[in-house]
Amino acid sequence: MQLAHRWSDRNLSRTELVIAILILALLIGNFSRYMVVLFARAEQSIMTRTVININTALNYRATMAVMRRQYDELQFLIKMNPMQDMQSSPEISDFENGENKISLEFFGSIISLPENYAGLIDADNAQAMEKGKWYFQRDDHILVYRLSNSEFFSSDLEGPARIRFRTKLYYKDNNANGRFDQMIDEYHTVKLQTLDQYTWAN
Image 1 (cartoon, rainbow, N blue to C red):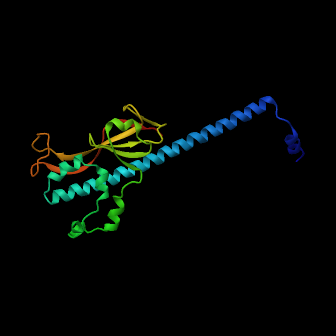
Image 2 (cartoon, rainbow, N blue to C red):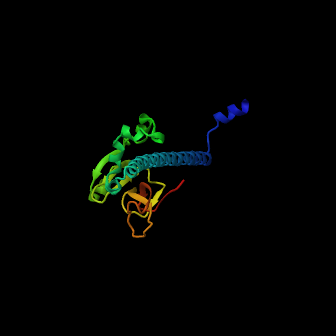
């Protein structure tokens, strides 16, 4: 106790004070970096979940179109705003037969529109996009997510940190003509395709 009392009454030397400040700065720096990484991972997780939801909605629409032999709708899906598709609800008739019976309430929750969707823009306004928002570039049919936390993100795309997606039809081109032909080619799915190479460091 006497030793502790003596130490508490003892004034720190200049060297000890500098060391204490350096240790404190190091701890603060590590904590700050940890928080930045935490926010970046959370943003990545939310963005990935949104992409999964969009793909679910697109695949639902495309599958129903193929079942009804409405193949023209597949070409429509490729150019439409996928966020618009998430606003549409499944039709009750879609769930009347066999394996398609599913809870409308459950499916509706899967394809809910994200709160951070900001609407339509032109490609010329891409530089002014708000951080943490989804946008659809109507002139080139591209869905874009503008990152909020870009400290650990890198991309070949110049300008603000963002990820671009385009809706793509995946199929087996049986006649090798480079386009989807109904009743000839084998339909697989419709989903978002990333347009640029990017990495999200941990």
